[in-house]
Length: 124
Image (cartoon, rainbow, N blue to C red; front, side, top):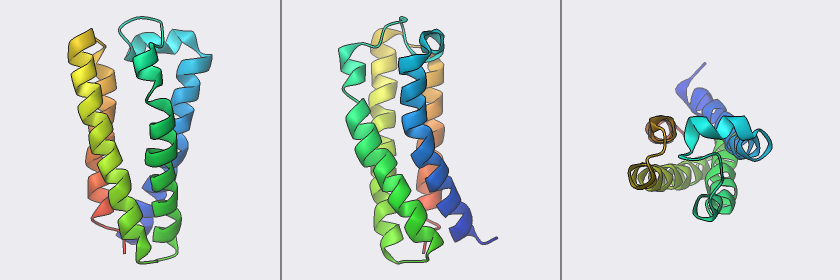
């Protein structure tokens, strides 16, 4: 399997994982202690749901589909996803420092950002 297909698969997996993570936090309150400083989804944190799902997951889905189809536009979508990942990572790290959130939030976002950038470099 070539790296474009692997990158495409990563973007599709990420596109599904992002809304799944938000759904987990919303539906399974016990999961919040792994990521949040309290068992409550603050309004500030909830404000990230729409941009995360629409921009980050949306760009990841588009990048994944276009990468599998070997379309040149996959590169643009992949870099939009990468920018979204980097922005979300910067926000999450800063938010974690300010609120004392568990390090898992920042670690997960940092891993996502690194993998997203690496995969963006490999599409079409």
